[in-house]
View 1 (cartoon, rainbow, N blue to C red):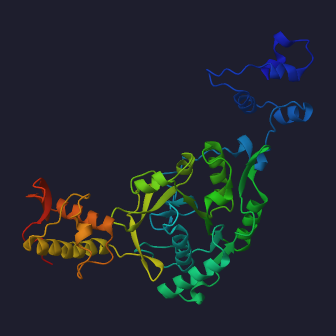
View 2 (cartoon, rainbow, N blue to C red; view 1 turned 90 degrees about the horizontal axis):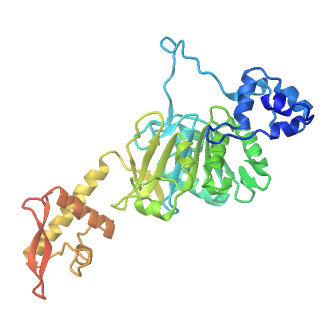
Amino acid sequence: MNAARGKKYEGTGDTGTRWKSYKIDRDAKVTRAHLLFMADMRGAPLPELKARYKWFPISVADPASGSGLSAIKCVPIHDVLRANILAPEYLLDLMILMGEVNLLAGHGGTGKSYLALILAVFVAIGRAFGGLKVARRRVLFFSCEDSGDVLRYRLLRILQHYGIGLDELDDYLVILDATGSDPGLYREDRSGAGTTQSYEDLQALCIKHSTEFLVIDNASDVFDANEISRPRVRAFLRSLRQLVEGMTVLILSHVDKATAKARGGAEGYSGSTAWNNSVRSRLLLYMDDAGRIKLEQQKNNYGKCGEPILLDWEDGVLVPLPPGSDERAQQADMGVVLGLIKEMFDRDEFIASANNSSDRAWHKLPGHPDFPKHLNNARLNALLRKAETEGKLIKGDYQGADRKPRKRWVVVAGASSP
């Protein structure tokens, strides 16, 4: 504003030219937006200037509209020691934050969509899942990947396996098939980026059904913009939070092959870091080294991350394993495998510890009738490493048929006992 009144430009007559003559001081991080902000704070008549000059660079928000600079709110702190301030709540205890946008990522084929539908059903009836408390809420499942027939079949299997009646859902679950439509909620084109008509339609449906928990499958279908652009991703995720005030959102996302291969401990998202920064809770579904499906929370903005949930397929349905059951099952399998190794050792048939040997465990043990049939190569190797770590299995020296030194597995006395 000062540029328009400066002595340097007196008599030029063109206020727009004088405004545009302002040079941005990039080193000091001062832009026209900063000037407008400071002018607005000092009471400059910005709306009047906009109405008078077509060249004015931005539209200034009406304070009553709750947008623009006026949307910034001052947080009261004078009463925090005496006010009744509630702790953050969870839809799925320590895993899915209430009233926030949550992300569930995983590689294709791990069971994300199936698990999301199971969680939707459990939230609709308010039943604990995997030993974790679940708050009952009205659910809308927005499917962009699976057709209605697939969803109906999966729902049937879920209800049958978990013994859930339709009367328990009590209109708390609504499933939408968006595979035959344009499901894009946020789109970028030459004119810019923003929410779409589909966004407004979904918003209307959420309001119509009093939705409290929205599941979106999948981000790649509803986000039609550059996934590595931080501003675009951030704006999209914020728009999901603004769909319905207080509504909890769980959006599913694919991860790349490198992330899937890294499994636990990897950053379970792909694209911009905004996929991580702009959600309050982030979950990763992956196969662990033992070949078991694991749901792991990798981010919780409001507290410690919840304990991982182990899952397995039973009759074609994902089910959570009871706490401690994985360790008990591993110990039982370990006892059988060590017993077989000892039995072969006593017959002078050795199991090589090298994974590239023709005498390795995976080549010699699966043919035995007592070998656990659910163990694959990865699970067997993980079991052997665990036994070695626990001191139940050691590597002993022996001489191969070519008279070269080799290493074989030797069971420690008593380790194979049940």
